[in-house]
Every structure is written in structure tokens, then in C-alpha cells.
Amino acid sequence: AQKVTQAQTEISVVEKEDVTLDCVYETRDTTYYLFWYKQPPSGELVFLIRRNSFDEQNEISGRYSWNFQKSTSSFNFTITASQVVDSAVYFCALSDVIKAAGNKLTFGGGTRVLVKP
Amino acid sequence: DAGITQSPRHKVTETGTPVTLRCHQTENHRYMYWYRQDPGHGLRLIHYSYGVKDTDKGEVSDGYSVSRSKTEDFLLTLESATSSQTSVYFCAISESTSGGGQETQYFGPGTRLLVL
Image (cartoon, rainbow over all chains, first blue to last red; front, side):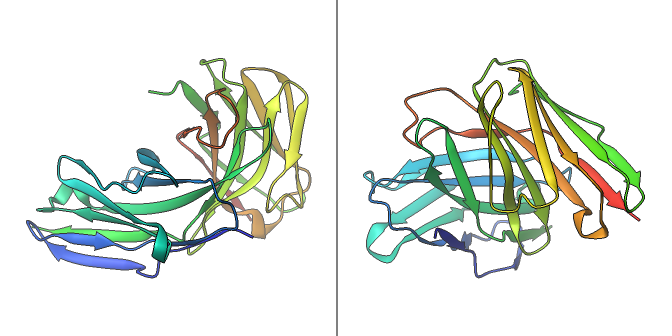
């Protein structure tokens, strides 16, 4: 069975500090996809990134960066120079392919990030 | 904007009553999903659909049924609501690609359901 663990339930930082969110996953599949979503206080879920298991290059998008390490089954997310607007719950998710039926996402429990001014 | 709406956005109901939540999409995507969100559990899949009248169970399907009679609508029914079904319900859609698992899911705004 697939499993995603986000060990940090809540992280509190002061604005401009960097914050790293851990995500560890378990799967028997050789091909899989990992996702990060952001859930701001308003409640919607915002897609941030998708990464496939064959691409271990780190990715940077503005102040966001992701570190995928297949050897340790981790897909960590770093916010550089955090801002108050980054305050949200962040979810890591793992895709489970349903043949010809899309995919099912297995979510971690989420990490709440609180950025204080 | 992925063109997904959910109705109602908030609902309070009593134990034992049936409840139907609606998810509507304007994107004509093939795949649709219902998740529930509870503290500490992230989101968990209830049911999903891979076409009109094609549905299947997810991880936490007990007490729920779904129907999809049109591409754009995916209905979730709580046959007899219980307090354990108090939750936030999210609908999601994903693009129809090769089905290799890479489809990104986009979520609706959610429905807050309180069962008293």
C-alpha cells in the first residue's frame, strides 16, 4: 500500500527565514508521481508541483524549491525567505495509477506553516 | 481556474438523513474524484469516476455512493449521514491523458458538512 508521511505537523518561522517541509513516501511502483499542494487559510487546494520518479533534478520556482531523492524516498520542499502569505497547510501526495482510470492520490497529513511578521 | 464548482458550500444536517453533494466541471475532463479532508489525515479518496456511469470505490467508501450521468457532474451521496461523516469534501478533476498516473488533479473549493 502507498503511504506518505509528513512528520512535521506544524512549523513556525519568522518572516524571511527559510523553511523546509519533509515528505517521505512508500510505494512498490517503479514509476510514480509526486505532488505538492498548498492550502491557504481560505481553504482551497492549490497545485504547486508534479515530479515523476525518473526525474531527480531539483526544481526551483521563485522562492520555492524541491529536492527529490529517490534513494531516501523523499521529496522535500523549501520556501526561501518566507513571507506571511506563505502561511498555509502544505500537502505532499503520491500518485497511484489506476489503469485507464486516472490516478488516485495518497496524501500526507499535511504540515501547517505559520510565518510571523 | 480549473472550472470546478461544488454545491452546497456549507451544509448542516441531522444524523440519519440523506445528503447529496454536487461537483460540476466545465472542462469536459474524463476523470473526477471525491475526497474528504479530516485533521491529521490529509485528504482521503472516497470514490472516483473515469467516465459517464463508470465509477469505483476509493479508500474510504463505506456509507457513500456516487453517480455520474453526465460528463460535467459527479454526485456524492451520503445515504444516511452519521456524525463521523462531518468533514470537508473536495471534488477534483484531472485531464484525460495516457492514463499513466501523471495527471495533475485540480480541486474544487470544497463543501463543509456538519452532521449533528
